Image (tube, rainbow, N blue to C red; front, side, top):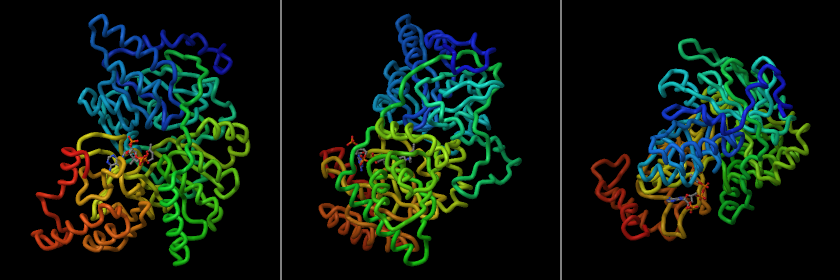
Length: 501
Ligand code: 0RQ
């Protein structure tokens, strides 16, 4: 009915999702909104998938490049991957159908640091962006847009795309207005200036996305909820990991290396992250803040009870129950939450300045502290690096957390050598499993190996790791980071051959 298109001159561009999707041509690059299942377009990708099927049935090739903020949902990544409509996907995804196509070699995937995407596009490294498809809560006058439940790369897509298609989602609360802070001060070198943000609560931009209204070629009205990010109560391992992290933070406060308010927290998504935030509820720390990418259920609860005083993120990623709590309390939450573009939420300059405490997941770590968080057995992608690298390298304190074993105990997540490396030994400070915590700061490689094997490895794999390390100490030509080259990846090879490490 156009009620949320407040610029009358744009109302004649309202059309159906099918009509709008028909404006997206094969071979184009499309910048879509969406970050961890929030704020992604919900109707146009589905309509586009139908157009792609029809083209394929006519014997025509039809593939596009799909650029987003981060992961989206089955209606976007899933639908387009299912119809084999994606040539190149970037910068992060976690959809099972996409994953299968990527690992089958049928789709290219560019897995890049989330903070790099904006500057890559501005610099032209990724080629031309043809169309932006952006979900918004409302269209105001003068090309101003009320952003949706995520910001991600939307500013960059709106600025850089030749044409813009908007999905105005009536399901998103209009009370989101004012919760965003869109910074328009970023430049390419050599024109950069310091980003004037010194506290997570600082507002340095404006509450709206802006665009050239002449570029808007279509507006589609929708009414659909974001993906329901199901929340499962933390399992035993997650609780043990959270316990180790919190005990360690208390120790750091006692040593005078952290204030009792800690430092702004960043955490990845998932069960362990939620467990840490639930654990913080009963911790002695006070007036906590978060400077992170994704605001999950655990963090929302801490904001509600005052333990967390402020959270800066680029996306909300909530279960439907938490979303209801968020919407009921949105007036209060608006003073406690700010949503920013991902180039700012993940900016190395700000992460270093604020002194973030970063907590991310790992797939495997090796005995020297290199971390793989993206690949299974060296060659298959799981999700992607996401923001973990932006945070890990620049944080004040960087944790990597995981259960010590995977797949029913057949895989050790602590291995002699990682089969792929995302976070090098130089970026990894603390490794935590349910077994314990290894504080690697200030330790040389051989000291790290002893600690990681002792504190983090599962007892079932510990003796074999110990034995490998002792032999490497004797046999390796170099004693700085002792390895036996013929054997370093034999655990993975054994798993691939026999289904167990
Ligand atoms: O697969 O469910 O099929 O069994 O990996 O593992 O233990 O459920 O842990 O959901 O926290 O994911 C690193 C993948 C951990 C995630 C990773 C299998 C395991 C399971 C998931 P199944 P868990 P999590 C913020 C920051 C990179 C991006 C990032 C991730 C599945 O944290 O994607 O940090 N991180 N972003 O069985 C084979 C191993 C394995 C293994 C686990 N050693 N070998 N499979 N698995 N260890 C968010 C953004 O940036 C957007």
